[in-house]
Length: 388
Image 1 (tube, one colour):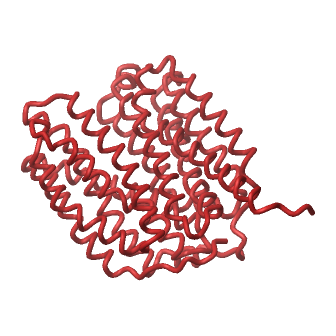
Image 2 (cartoon, one colour):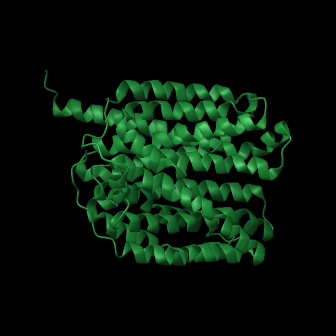
Image 3 (cartoon, rainbow, N blue to C red):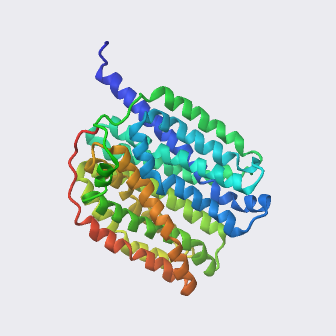
């Protein structure tokens, strides 16, 4: 067997990371198309707003809430297929929504698309973790995360072409899937085969506290995003200002994740988790009370978006280091399960807004960062163990 030089191995590892990051970009771009297309889908199928909104819940269930189970399945099969076929499934499912004959078939199509996303995320994160230099795990994970954030920002632009022309975008996912399959090596978890009881034991100790911290942080961020349109419209602004604010927040999230990931390589995972969450609270409160009429509104939006989301890739890497033998499952717990669980709870923020005001509901969401920071203070620093 011919020896591989360290330079060639490093280039191959970089190629793998770039391929799955591109997959993350297009996968999350597809997912971000669903919400902007719901009015068109409602008109096409003649259903109620509640029914068409259910599509987002179905997608969230199969792509996020069930992601740990898909991560377990991904550890038992060749993760190469999950990394390559995941975005392809997501793309086909969400670009063909305008071509199914009835609404039940549409729900099934969206569910299949969600499964594709759910399969991809643990496999993609595992490839990045397994190929990143130990001293740069946080940076590589944050770049992978930024790929998804950029995709979510571009997804609504894709949706703007309308249901009829959407299938052309499936070609992008097909090309990236082919490249990913060609670049990534075959692989699965190399440790001994374990049963469901041992998988359940992964979700204990520091990892369950880390998950709780992530749920509270995600719910605070989701609650603000959900209330933002109502807050700004109540203050006399329109969808243009809402769109600009959300775009600035999304770009800042990607930048903050990269900075946070690199900082965690230098200063430790837990110190970055603690400082990123705790330092966000005062400027976040000021942001909620501000509006685009204030000159500082958009710079403050960028600052808050970067700070509150700086801990996302750091949390993923910490979970992987807490469970080094099950990086795919640990990744799915922090990516899909925490975000999906928070997404299931965000309706409570809307209920509070109905009972009070959107501003009060957003401020109430913000207070969830306090227990999130307290949980971060009880987390031990994970060891930089070798991944399997």
